[in-house]
Image (cartoon, rainbow, N blue to C red; front, side, top):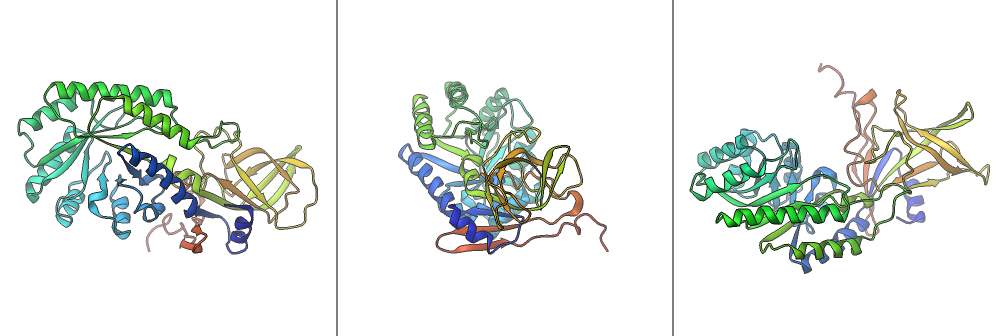
Length: 396
């Protein structure tokens, strides 16, 4: 958003607030989608990055990764087609699977994270007499997925008719976020070797769903991204592997981080032992930057003055939130010119995870309002400020 657009928003909202620029989101995702379509690559949105944006992405993403019953209910309210959903997650419960399968006639894709999950899905398919599409997740060395020896066992058993109602679509792999292209290239080569080993056993792998975990620059000390250049390099790396099946990229942070901003107001100011402290009406329960360490890294922040500037000299401020804990420091040594109580700080690149990973219930402070912004529709309130005291007290 431009400075004038931000000024207009500030005049019409209260803080703290999350604002998601839908124009920026659609432009970025549209560009990525066009580049992928040229290479015949599908796009899956990992909605845990920001579930508020599911509806805005409904006509851009080929699929949506769903990792909990709550996320599934969000997709239902947004009226997403079941055949666009990938039901993932390490804890799948029978009642949820049965409801999905019976309500939507076996549509959608289900991931397998363990042999227990595999057996559960096979039982649900048998009980409902519905065929289920399956992706088997390969572990990257953590609690997610199964190791490659188990992958071979699962596919070989399936080939022999051991799971008559399960239709194995392929494999899924994700090893983390904020990765550079060299690491991604090595992962693609490893995946190519695994797929080749399966095909040597006579097992066809129709699809690879892969989460590359592309890098997003959050801090001013980090090199800025060349999104289109990086995507071209990635597509070139992908074209080097010998795999003729469908490729679907699972992306979250890379798609949505850039479209979000967190608006928070300076409510107090003091100088203690030579250090300027600014207290804002937000805090670490609302705002999280991946890779921030003791608030020492400087994110992208706009300072919007609501009053007369008292000085043209920049001073360094430590910006703290409203929580009663010394941990509630958002950023240290932030240079501000003429900052006053009532000014607004706009923390940028908060469209992914930032709002979802905060300790929202601490001190029973309200959850901020959530707004969409676009040139066509202006400001839209999609969630009002929400009290948390009812969550943190005994039921009457």
